Image (cartoon, rainbow, N blue to C red; front, side, top):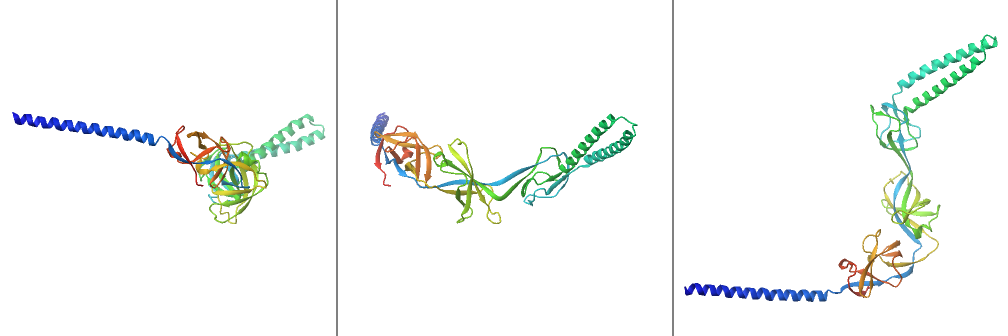
Length: 355
């Protein structure tokens, strides 16, 4: 009996010790948490002061090449395709046949119309002789002439329909797509292919509202294709967008002559380098101060040791610096490092950036 009492006493003592240890550990953890909160009350960040600088008179804009001339090949007739003459990738001259559609019914109708027209013309000769001999009234000739005119118009229309059964290249260029085969049945308005002329290309770039005012139609531009390293092409501005897109940038169209052999293709990337005569000043901050994307730019501004997330509108982007068009004032303190640990309203301990 005494043995059992001793064992129970030992177990109770162990339980008390464990409870005391757990309580002691919890107090230590809570103390460390409170200390951590105290230490992390201010998040360390690096800042810089937004200031006005003279912007470069050189603007580089990325863009994509497009064929200067592209055209869909549309059927103007209905019927079964009897023969296909050209394949994808073939270079065609304007008017060169691509395919032939069955025209038998049109030709049968044309023969009948021509036979009727020949009869009407014979009747006109006979009626003319009768009228000259006062054997027939003159008003009969009017009805006959109208019948001849109607038959001639029908003949002309049938010849046009027969001509349309030969599907021809609408321009000089390369057959990029062909959607018909021998035996296909097509109808009027059906797309049967697509062509592109790559002798000239358009480079489509986007520029901001500040820069678009300096871009002029006809001005020379240096074009640097990504796939042709070290190659500079001469370009000319042919069109400037009349209104901005959702990102408040404007489309600028630059015409470029494709180098010998047409190595460039639609969809390839290139840079357009504009050189402006006048320089201007702008509010500039380091590019790394931007939180998020350039299209939806935001920056953290520090005031009274509090970081405030603020949307800004960007202009010219030059390597490691960006121009701020709106949303920021000169002299304001902007965070350039440590944004990953921040949210709007976080208290910060700011140190000046070494840049």
